[in-house]
Length: 604
Image 1: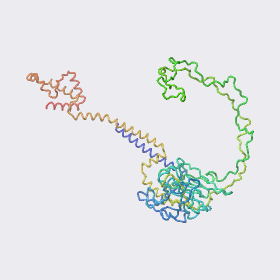
Image 2 (image 1 turned 90 degrees about the vertical axis):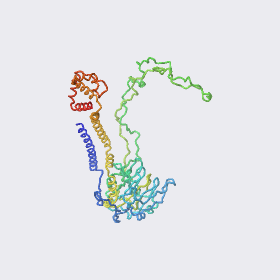
Image 3 (image 1 turned 180 degrees about the vertical axis):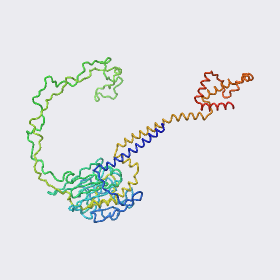
Image 4 (image 1 turned 180 degrees about the horizontal axis):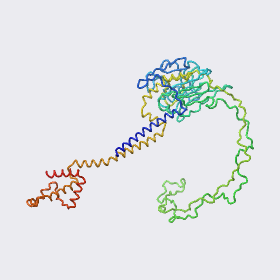
């Protein structure tokens, strides 16, 4: 019964663990569907075979008419012709670190999926690096089409401090010579991930031109609600996409999931359009302006018995010095064993005094020195008197300067119409090396970008995910999403362990007793019960023997009939014989076998 119960408990615990993981997995799926902030718009790639068939990768096709810029970096010779290494220097920085001497190279990823898949890799760390490429055709925001920027980044060594963002360089004279590309080169949009320590960002900055005076101001997108962490740690390829629509809306996606969206008019700081009214810089607060909401009650007076000088504590008048307190003995005395050093100079060092040590007379005493009663709260203490506060009848509210019309006010309802884009550049500094960029495109069609990703990034990630798709990885991912599962799993494991231990030790006792009985049956050595049985049988044999035989054999016959033991035969009373017979009746099977075995030995 116990065995069945133990097995049932173990099966129940295992089933509970499996059910827990299933429910947690269902919660993850439910969250993915219920969370409206995350959107997955990527369809299954038709180029990926189902089941266990081989996943085949080919360089994604590039139709020049569909792209303003496109480079999958697989054709190294052609790709090198597109990109220009910067020869510039940074301003306002030491000469030895002002050069853009970071090393770029076209090579396969460290984790090779397909040998012919290449990328642009920043090889060096802790160096300024800049490289740029001219667009095949300039992107003009005047058309009623969106701007779509998409590229892959693989932080092959992880990232602790550094960026992997793009700059879409503004068309104009300052960007005609790409060998002079530096941090001051004008750009229209800066987009991409950046991290340093705990500061994680997904940049989307656009430079807005004031339509009145032509000044340029950087507008920074509000931070996404969800914090990005995995792309900087997992060392896997990740796809970054920015879509800016002509209606001023935008979306930022990472691996096809929207992580941030909004409007150019309302979700940037500082705002695109300045306020219509501003504070008058010439307005000043009047000297008699009363901003106090409450004031002390002028009719309130301090009571006569209010003593502001009363101390908060006073000696306890009921305290009594404990018996054995040595008031005449100081706590510390001069060390009687100390002596003045030989090199002590009274003129330089002053008069020598022995150091103080604890008074040995106080070691066993209750206390030494002058006794002071302990302090207790003073019942008469009230502190400093203050008048009660009342509403201020002259309160005029918080003063604020008057508003005037903003002389610099303008209203730009089409911030989408930015400065045209003529080139794309990477101007970076990073503390990590081997940052790989791949499949960079700029287009005006979201579907074109989606198809391009389906033929490149999606195939690559499906291959990697299939290779690493194990139960352990799923559990790790699940626990990252729901950290509380660690605690639940630990409790389930402890319960399972307790059940197993209980089940094991509950069976140990009957097994031990059965083993002892089996060992006793395997040997012919006399057991305590067997000895009593033999003695009883010998007594019965002595009673049934022929008296004439005894007389014929004499007294020595008793010695010849006991070969099993060298000790003298024990005599038993009739009461012992009855108890022995009752024990034989209580265990008929075992005693019969034992008795038979003993009789056979006696005959031998």
